[in-house]
Image 1 (tube, helix red, strand yellow):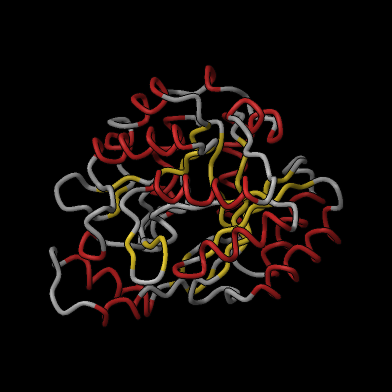
Image 2 (cartoon, rainbow, N blue to C red):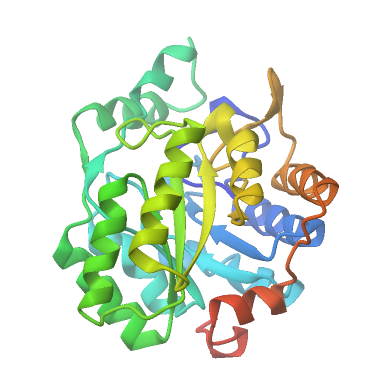
Length: 299
């Protein structure tokens, strides 16, 4: 819905108050999204926050108004500590969480040069900070998340893989018996510091995942920025699932800002249905991903 990459200056349509996040999440579900991936923002100025109190201002409302699976980020922001990033998920005990599969450079700083003025001083400062920050996801961090949320809460994961090595890291945890199939792998392409947004890279990621996991995984595709719609459609043709939203891209086409998350969902749903690809319902998604069910969460 909102992520921690884009800032309020970049689009007036980016949701950052709890009311806006709840409304856009519910609308996206109504448009056909079966899984809702959620970050939180400071209601005062839109900066990323990991405060469980902010999450709890919109999580129950979304659950009450929608059947969609709620997926809480454990990535938060590269500027947050791991404990900060896990705070909301530990309290909410969701059906799903994202889990980043390796430490990496995560460069947002080029976006700082695209705007001359900013709504809030924190925006350019946050972007510039990524020039000299490592997005930390060590083996120990991953073990902690698997223990606390997977074993402790029955949460299953969207394994976010920003490069080929991240697939081998997931295979390592599978070999140790710390994760169980089916693995839900998110191929993330186009983030500065990760694998580039080339279709051949997507095909390569799928080929390696096929080699490592065989029939024991499902995959989805995240295309950053202007590469979003082309890459996710390619992924769907290859047999995968798709992820869209204002966290990943603010546009619907060249020079055209998306007015909401729901608009992106409706657009990609139209593309998929034109290709005779059926969109899964939330119930079907729960079955595919073997989730515990919305009645067993902590909100």
